[in-house]
Amino acid sequence: MKIFSIKKSTREIAGGLSLFLEEKSPANIDNVATLEEANENSLCFYQQEKYKGDLLKSKAGLVIVPQDFALDVELNIIKAKNPHFTFLQIVKSIFLPEESKKISDKASIDASAKIGEGATIGEFVSVGANVTIGKKALIYPNVTIYEGTQIGDNVIIHSGAVLGSDGFGFLYQDGVQHKVPQLGTVIIGNDVEIGAGSKVDRGTLGATTIGDGTKLDNLVQIGHNCTVGKGCCLCAQVGLAGHTKVGDFVYIAGQVGTAGHMTIGSYSRIGAQSGVLKDVPDGGEVWGSPAVSASDQKRILISQRQLPKLLPRLKKLLKK
Image 1: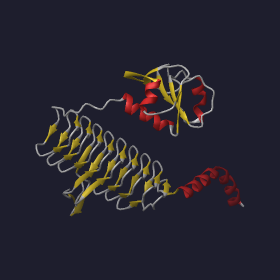
Image 2: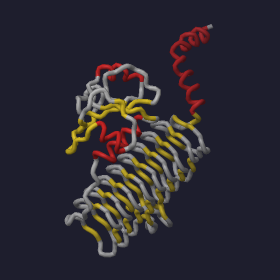
Image 3: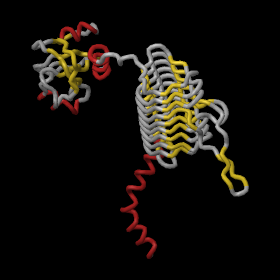
Image 4: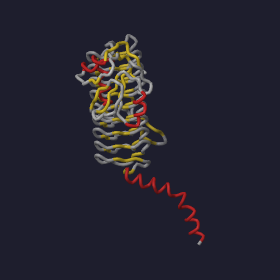
């Protein structure tokens, strides 16, 4: 349960976003909670039938429900096409104030860096030379931004992230791994969010780029000279080896690794813990290690499950 510092009536909430309220008993909302944990001042949403039992027992003050909702409940409800999205709209527009715009005096910012209007930079952030940070960026404490990195507007960077560090490049010669100078940069688009502990390497030559609207979860590794398109979601512990190209609106689940110097097409889906060794076409769906098409992987799994039953029969055939 999250309790807010302000309280709004059910009518104020509905009126603020021009939503139709079916009110059984007026309530004042000051928190959000699950249906199960809710009290008479809670805002909740109901979208999946598996939570029907929780809904029927809920004490919530206001519940956002689907448009075809027909259950007889003694709750204040608002019907919406997408209850979860409407719930988020209410929370963001009514209950969550904007972060105070400030640059901490404990941040280390090079004099040559350019910081956009309305940016917030937390304690112990390090901003290197010739860095550009766009408008209304929100950079949490302990972020490190190396020299030359370019960051767009409305970007959120969580604690411990590192942008622009050296890519992993070495040249073996005469028994020695010689470091290859990393001379490129990092370019982050608008409306990007980068999770805690994530890392985006600078290009060896040229840039490593993250497109507009892309979201990186915690502990994501983007190697040198990778290109990630717009509107992508990369979940925790994804690792892109150098020169991986990811199209637009790609979803990559947790712990996926790529081999590098390959392309993942737009609108494709990569299943969790996959090892991607070759190109994925636009709209492709792959998983497994090594990753194969989802349909092939399902057949493989079904075959594997039959092996314990087949093994005794195979032994009998071998004896004959």
